[in-house]
Structure formats: structure tokens, C-alpha cells
Image (cartoon, rainbow, N blue to C red; front, side, top):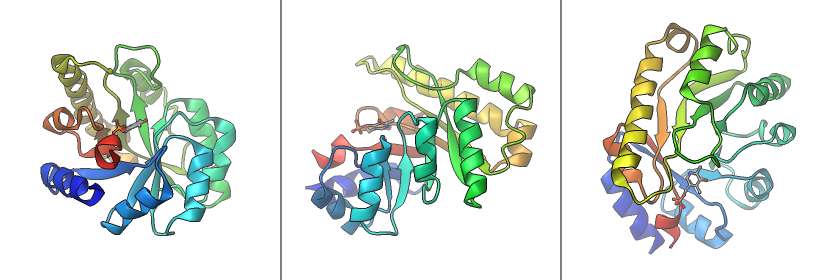
Amino acid sequence: MIAQNILKIKQELGENVDLVVVSKYRNLKDIQTVYDSGIRNFAENRVQPLLDRTIALPSDIQWHIIGHLQTNKVKYIVPFIHLIQSVDSLKLMTEINFQAKKHNRIIDCLLQIYIAQEDTKFGFTQEELLTHIENGDFNSFENINIKGLMGMASNTENKEQIESEFKGLSAFFNELKNQPFFKNKTDFSILSMGMSSDYSIAIASGSNMVRIGSLIFE
Ligand SMILES: *Cc1c(COP(=O)(O)O)cnc(C)c1O
């Protein structure tokens, strides 16, 4: 089942959209099955399970973190993390930069943008982000490479609403790409949006990275 699910999703994504498999809450055997089908990019939303899994699973997995990250946990993941997708505050960036410097790494990060009409989701608003850029707040983060944006649409059945949220983020992404700071100082190219329930809408709206769990494992 798992291998077939992946094949089907990969066909739909084509070559220009990257698949990150969300392995949170899944057992090691099922994750290994996904790995055996050729997937190397996996995501967890919490630090402790992530650390447990790095020990139990093959070492060539590229691990992403996609859940709200507490500053006091940053030090545990900085030595190995491939992409931090849930960067949602300056305070967090300050700590990532500090730990990255210590480990002599440059950490790839996505800025999480708040696009949902819910108050449970983390992220910068578009206005906040523009203000940070204007103020030069990101200029000193020499050990952070801002690779792009991540966003989660509202948890709703309303497809028009989801589409409008994704299209809004996609437009913002394209606007930032041409902004001097991102153009000159970063490698700004990833737009991570779309999960099991809404990834088709996300890729139609311009996503080039999807994060899928349930559709693969269930
Ligand atoms: C859990 C999670 C996903 C995957 O959700 P599925 O519905 O299982 O595909 C994607 N992104 C984030 C941020 C998540 O927390």
C-alpha cells in the first residue's frame, strides 16, 4: 500500500515539486518502507521524536522540522537538521544563528507565514515580515540561509478559501523573490505548501514542496 501511495502521489507532483514525507506518529517499520521506496526527505513536528528517529533510521535521511520549535530545543537539532520549515520569530532565528555558528554550519530555513483564518497557527504575518526586512532585522544572521516560505491553509472544506490562501502566499513569495535582500543574500527558491487534504490545490497555486503524511501511511 505505502509504496503504491507514494508512486501515485509522485506521478501527480511531477518533477518540479518536491515530496517531503511527514512521519510524525508513524511506526519505524512503516517509515522504513517509505525509505525503501526511495524517499530521503522526512519531516517531524517535534524535537524528541525526531531525535529518537535519527538514531533508529538510516543516516542518509534528510530531516525537516515542520512544527513550532522552542528556542531551548534548537541546540539538539542544529548539528544535523536539513531544513527548518517552521521559523516563526526573530527570537528563534537569533538562537538558530547562534547555535549554527557554534557548530560551524549554515542552516537552511523557511519562514513560516500565517495565512489561515484560525488563531491556532504560528507564523509571521506578511506585514511583519516586510517590516523585518525594511528594518534590516535579518541582516546579521550569517549562519542562516533563508530558502523560502512555508504556509498552512485553514483546516476547512471550503476549497475556494484554501485556494485563495495559497494563491496569496504564492504571490507574496514571488514578490519577495525580487526583493533585494532575498535576491542578493539568500538562496530563495522554496515555497512549501500543501498537505494530504489540500496538496492538489497547493501545486496548482504554485507550491514546489509538499508535506504529506496521512495519504501515504493510511
Ligand atoms: C502533520 C503536518 C503535515 C502533514 O499532514 P497530513 O495531513 O498527515 O498530510 C504537513 N505539515 C505540517 C506543518 C504538519 O504538522
